[in-house]
Image 1: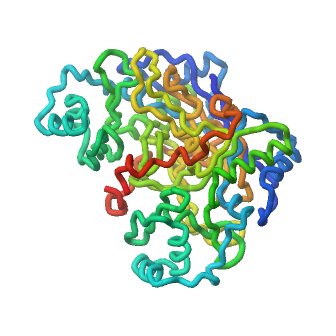
Image 2: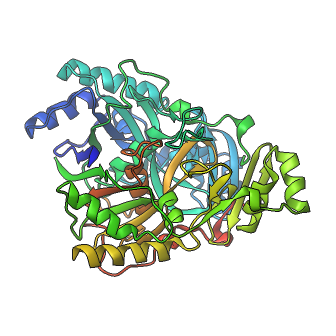
Image 3: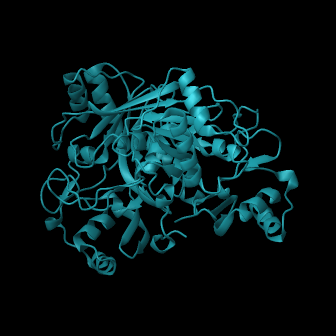
Length: 254
Length: 254
């Protein structure tokens, strides 16, 4: 057997508050439990924790929905204040049908509700927005980890997205630093010497999905460590998860 | 740290030939290397290996393209024989633009080229079709594993699919047995006691994606073992990966 990966959830992180230095908290929590990081690991952090640390929490009671939000909300059966927030976080509406609102966020992500939701956000009527720039967040967390631990694992920020044609949500990468997000096999050859066609592996998304398997949605486990990713971890921060965004001109579904 | 998962590739499998009993081969390869299976593991097998074992290999030289295939091929810049095969494996064309042909297969999967490709298929002009019913394949492999090892891990059959809006391909589940494919948290509560909304985790897809991280596209590693999935492995075969197919009436993108 070869190519082993190990994935563990980081236990013992306190509830994340605005201004929290997540990188430091993760290193401390790992140390408390005898765990250690290396520069060939990846630390996967949930979007929700990053949004809390960055103060991206909003109180729906303070949102005044405009006419467009009220009309959309009525049509979709949604809370007009939530729709107002979704629109304010979006540069385009991709689909608004039945009870589904799929948008393109200012950050370039195409997902339901601009990634806004209330799960695991303390307080009634409070919701979490996506980080403004989760690649920047990942770079900052990586710097904090490096300062606290003297090693430089990759950092991936993950959120749960649905996808067309399939049921359920998988975690994907919305931020990254130190990970080669795409593993491009085009032009390389298979075992038979035949050129591999159209094989670009979405490594960052697979890392996010793998990490989600060890977390429980009701638990205080906003971070995981994946060991054994040396093939994909890089010294510089690299292009980030933005590299996972398909340009509109190459996309058939918007 | 908790909830650890371990993922290892199964080394030493010979090239898979028609009629091969994959379940037996995997158990034997693990045994040769001192590995062992338990009933809380998942064995993830690549679609290509299953297709080879089931004789789902076609020689393009023997395909006679019809008029529709020739017209589509000309428009998309594809091999007309390949397009003929794609159409014969499909019940609907979802998109045919630029050089992309996205279809719904007879088995209900929506993907590029009906999942047909030539990578890692020995012989010029030879391509692999998807298994006819990969849930049935997974059940058969699970039975073979049980007979050879006396334990009953989950079996997932994985293939690399692209997705709208994102770059790159991730592995998803197209077949399964013994895995609860969806983890439905709707109606359950988060730590704050708030009901979780719209959280159905696509466990089978995340399992497939995680396994892909340890395989190399040019290697003879058509199978991986994931340890630590007891929360999702079930005794009976369950609904299979078909449960991941979103009904057309609930889909906004076809």
